[in-house]
Image (cartoon, rainbow, N blue to C red; front, top):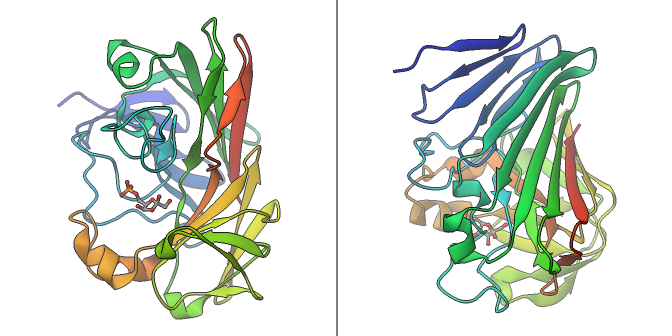
Length: 288
Ligand code: TA6
């Protein structure tokens, strides 16, 4: 195995998962980022509970998408839309690609990591567009992720996606979620339109696309509070598979659903976002 390399005073690079892994430990928090998928695996402020949930059965060696943390769904969200064509992987290919580490640096506000992915023969067989995708991560008092889609081609490109954050919770009974707004699409019942009444509590499987959420969605977990602030999105997705979903997934323990809740900054509209040639669009999440 390759030896661990010190990159900065607060960041090292190892291969203990079978893929390049950045481990950060600074004055604010500890965090891990796999270069497979540019995937945040963990983020925990010193003296506080972990913010992100990672399945105890997550496969980290690059053979499948990682269950937990913050998967990057890109350049589409969910099943491939008609404009992309059938037979393509759910949630796109960014989460199963090996990204490049462009830089890491320590600052007063925390540790900044810059990762990138560009089109390749493999990406063009799935999605025929030249692109540069950048992920800028700040591990500080808060965890900030900015995912920038840059169109390096001559034609407009259309994308959708999500920063598919798996939050760690203590137990479903302890949780209530506010800031989701009212209208949502209920994917558990075929995408039906529905209205949220008051705060959201957890008592069964949920797969919802909230269409008018506030900038910050708050997950109150007993006396612990986590906020998810979104930018440049069109919706916030809330997902928990519950017991029936968890038992169907090889990479989640049957009781795994009891300690996770996904609150996702997303672009879910069928029409996606159009990025003109030479232009860029950034989708962002801050875990506060
Ligand atoms: O964001 C919610 C969702 O799209 C669900 O429909 C569910 O399938 C989930 O993501 C996980 O998808 P995955 O492909 O990672 O199993």
